[in-house]
Image (tube, rainbow, N blue to C red; front, side, top):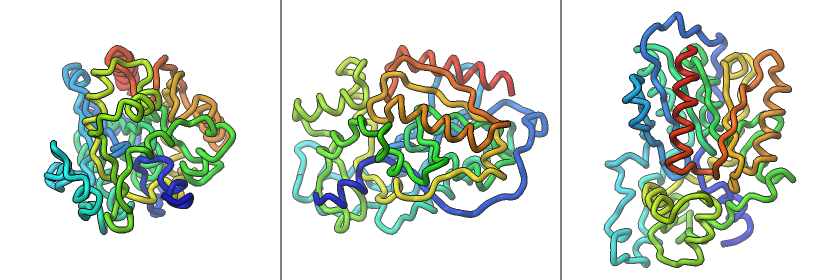
Length: 314
């Protein structure tokens, strides 16, 4: 992999961008009474989990299915099964070939529109999914009652997640360890492809340190096998700044992960600070979670308690 490809791949995750703006501000939750719906924007490699616990507490929850990463889109091909056909896996075209970042944002916007018909909406973005929710907020601010950035990219002074990872605050990221899972030529495949099913203990240990350093091996392997192999190229290069007229008027929360080795804590703090400087009248409410980039089951329970408290105040 040449240096240009390595730089483009550095976030190994998904964000999207289009520039359409809405001109009106967000509606109050009181204007759309009902049970709040949590909409979980997809993060890295199509992951968009829906926590059962929030449903059991009485909320609606929905994950966003993205074109090229839906269950029917053949990401999990025969060559990816065991025993793997690595030659075929490294060359077969991706269902993401021909899909654009605008397609992914449009799918998230449509999910928010449908959810908002039933009541208040809490839009959640983790990791690079944070950049996506900023762009969705640019389009449909009146349909979103709260934005939650969960150790997520929030672009303000800089345009893209890639630019933020290139700062001094982002220099300690361990995301480069994830590039060791990549196979094939993205130009041939039409996507960045990773083989999450390798059994190399050295590479797995590096990935665990980056993603879930405080987890058990069982939790880490479960998470790793929830990831789709293909990811849309170029998502980390799109201008993902929130517009002051739209995104800038929606209440927002940032959940810092204190032991994050993918989005380092110093980088999280920089993005919070720069966003607050742009909207001094609408600052982040900041909460801390003492965990790595991907929370363990125990820490996820704490995170869902926080989401519950936030939704009850809408």
